Length: 447
Image (cartoon, rainbow, N blue to C red; front, top):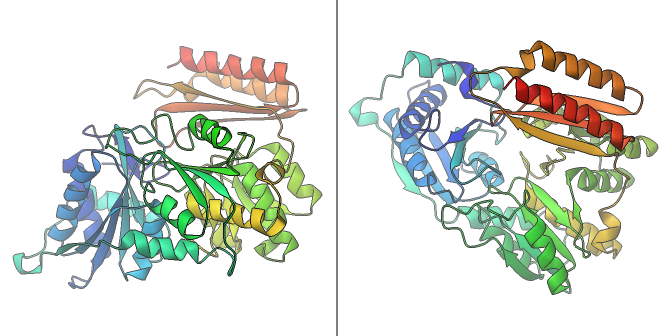
């Protein structure tokens, strides 16, 4: 077993196919249990949440068996957003938190994400140690030291109250009609409840999970349904979450979709003006648009770029003392409030800006002109390494040379799927098409 079992966001894959099998989940639970219970005492506990995938039951039971076999006590939250696990792990004095979810992936996939006792995602070093325990095997606890398991039925309500507390004191959402698309995922009850309790007229979408329809034609990766609903109902805003509710897309009253870059640009500008932006900078990944970088520079706000993955954004934020960061894909991290990306919390911050400025969503979601960007995904055969191919490397080198004066090029392997992601930006759209097509063709030939 190698470190590669962990990708950019935990372990992920197709359910009942390696590495996402019940047998391996049990072993992962045992390895993580041994890692966090090294002193052998019996008061250690783990918090486990999940989204609405059918396979979540299987992995919840397998992980519980693994943890309890090493003496860890398990607290099962049921379906809750990923940020709820980040919140409740330290709140419930747990040693580790686990979220069973494949986020925005199809229902057939699933994943296992780990949070440390501080509520932040585990470091690469901690994951490497758990992987080492997977390789060597874990001795189970003595019979009298087996852990206990308990359902926690009010986890989502604890999370609801925390999220509501981040909304400006004394402000309400009365008079605002809000479409909330929960992607048939983990926030299907939480998000509508929070918005309604704050006074909004709520129009829910994607709130009928059946175990197989998470992210299916809904949510942040398919915002068209919510956009149509906003226009049809004359809503003021649409908020689109993904399957585990840690990312968000915003839809204005005209049905136009704004990504994480626009949301981060708006928030960074407001926070800087209010003196709330720690370090005077935003942390974002290499995927964020050049337009965002130029917009922030014009306001003397810094931009620190990281590798792709919200965990790397959070690591840079903690290291540099920054409190705002995120990804173009909609992970928005506000460490003043949460330990990880939180789509609902970010949506509430956007609503707070609408309430406080009395501006429509369309004025707040279009804060900068984007540089034309193209992202193409090329699926490759497992076991192949197309980025090592000489023809692919030559195509990339030529593309970088061609775009040097007007934009940039980013080629990377997905950390969660067998995909090569080809992203380019340039004011010259024709050149951008030609460059990306050339690289995509080379990758396909090597796949």
